[in-house]
Length: 398
Image (cartoon, rainbow, N blue to C red; front, side, top):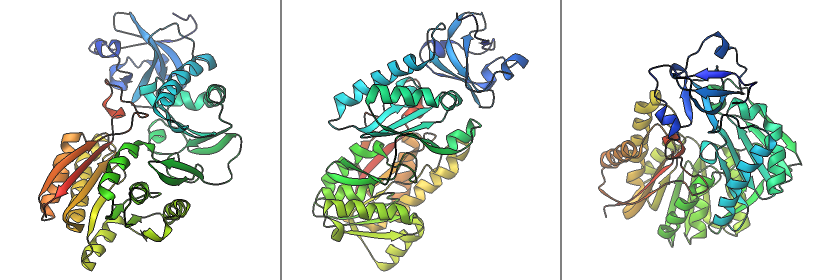
């Protein structure tokens, strides 16, 4: 035990076995939250013990969060410093370098890579850190320094925005910690070129998690007319164009995102095959139906409609509505891809909602493929939240 660390302790009825077997979180109702525990500064470290005073590991504490403690190291005597961070980054980097030929990937997927609440996406010589836990916010300078040392990146951006930070009681912030950023970064995936805005875009600027699902969609897209709903910067649409689609129509509510999609298509030499429609996705799908439009492939990749258990029912209804509106837009014998990034909606619930929606849209279907996030988004088996992405591909009646 490190002598200067405070000690926090599980309640007698809490079960330490889960922690010992790799579950990384302790919820506030599982911990003895006396005055001393509540006084621990958010992002500080403590030794976690079970109710019998036996050590369980070293954790970071945030009394302001429902996840009051996150396990950092199974060794209660570990020292969390730049060297410790660098070792975790090196391990994460070794996996990505084995998987990818070029340095464009998610480098750190939070708890799955042993850096709780921390996301790092790499874009060549630049990287974006999302410190969604108080310890990572407090040690962002050390994380950035270790990141530069381990990977050699020159530009490091801190993107402290989003729902997760609010749950931790953290303020929003966006800044360049080192280097410079003058415009969007070109990213090549599956033969398509994407423009990632690392400063003003959603999340870190690009969604790497859909890479394998883009690749599957490409196999359906040759010589096809493709509709990409909730397209962001052209995720499935540009992949389809790279796969030989005759035309891709991208729908998104963000005009800047669609401009980046157009820029990507131009960089690919496919600007003449991309059509964009800016506006509410539901309204746009209804308008296309009214126009009698149909496509050989329709893919819908909406934001997280069920970001929490409290939002699950409403979220599943929204996914069902997406499927109901999308199904009639698929030409006979065509394909429909439906995605969910809501960790609260498990695969079975999402699949059932999607099937109901397709049925309500007047179509029958075959489920031909189920996808998930790419291997640069590894899943921690003990933590279902790390395996959030689901992608379902259906062939509709024809």
